[in-house]
Image (cartoon, rainbow, N blue to C red; front, side):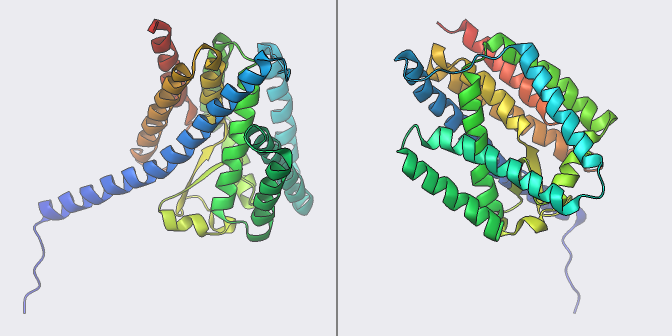
Length: 297
């Protein structure tokens, strides 16, 4: 009996549909993580802003040079740290410690606005215990959502929008150089993935991979990684306009989401799948979003 093979153009069309389906499936997961984090950042900032108005709390204001200096200082130490080849176990402890402190602080900042301190500590403690004990992708991503949303919500109110725009432009160039020229960003990401501590979102290609362990997260495997900075910087811009209205902040979030779609599209359409600087398209659309809200009454 003869086996029937569909004509080539039908096979190609089917393959194209599969590729398109996979593109949207992965972006739906990435976009959801991105959107939830940004939304949580502006909701938290909205609450914080109310507290600032009634003088319940004081938020730091941050100048451009302070921020850049701190960033360079931290980057320099991280790179120095990575270059030490010997201290494997010690490094892992430091990375884990840094991850836990950052996520715990960010998570407390967010949760404490909506529930009493005791409840917030309980939830964060529970999530960190799961992350340490079972090191699953879903626990990691929830901690990152809370950590990034807390950081953006807390610091964003201290920035003028114009300063955040300057930062977005500077860091877009930095991202480009760090990925393509010096490649130190790629080295940092690899090192942290080896130690199972990733400062960004782990995006599974299918929902079921959320329950996988972190040691399964390998380059070119079932996961993509979106760096924390690619979510925090546009969120800082959205948060910086919260005092001018929640809707305006939300418009920036939606534009940054379109930017992340554009960035993912660029990644997928490369000849060879290499890491790309994700921030430039996200920054560009966030800034366009900002200029659009300037036109609103």
